Length: 397
Image (cartoon, rainbow, N blue to C red; front, top):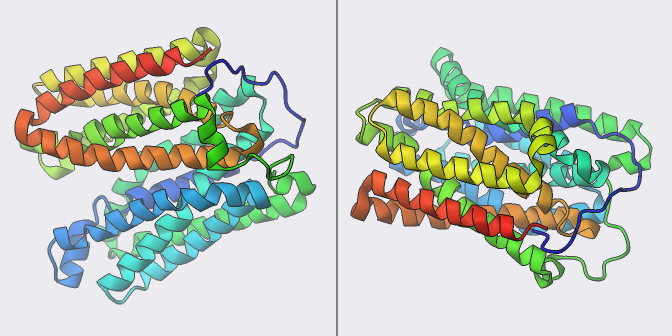
């Protein structure tokens, strides 16, 4: 994240981006990530295997989602970010339709990985497109509106998939989400075609010299951003957040459905952030907003380590959702300015570092459970996040 660099005071004036349509694209791809949360037992019965045997459906999506960042950013910078994201969204929709028709588990695993591959190109490239089109002073609020789609996916995708699967079978959620993704992709394609050429997706300006991951990592700001993103994924996405549901089941005696409902309260806090982002930035400024989010996360995780009942955990999940997006939202905005001449590459690198941290964090947190238990692991994550917030804030000038 920028050390001594100041964000540019102004940018070339471009046509206004369709933020609402971008948010729907975020909802479509975000829903794909959470679609299987309630469906794994049904799929295991369908294919006559154990739940652990269908875990590849989750891993395949996530791994492909992370790996595509290596190429998606540079492609967006070369051919237009919104254009590449639109094509990826349409291919993602087709993969979902194929998943609904899958005849066996191997085919479904392959299509699930392909879905993750194409889904991973959508959100980072649309964020980078907004970075190209929205002045820095307004970007936090606009990205907050854009993130509404992803937050609503976190809240609704799992429960809706469970209800649809109970009404019909596991194929119906794939079918409906695939049709929805194709509809949004088609609407976005029509919008891009109808606008003047710059609206089809901005490409990198100034030639190819100095672009790419090497250019990003040569900058102290870029190295710090990648480090913060990795640790963000390590302590939160792959660590504390991923194991909150298991904590409710194993430590507090709730069943899986109850644990899912409690963890979903995280989305309530996240949704509150999307509505308040512009006001929070105006009142606090980026540095204080990032620090407040980090302190809130640390306090929430510390309280989670001491929680004695599900109601406390539910309230803490809402607090953690708001605090996380206060912290993470600033990092996302900074990622859009880490390499202005190649924003797709920079945002893709940010997402890749986040996913690598998530994978490492899940392994470390799992090992920690065997030595210090859930509560000790949450306490360790609280200390780590506080140190991370102080380090990240120190790099912002």
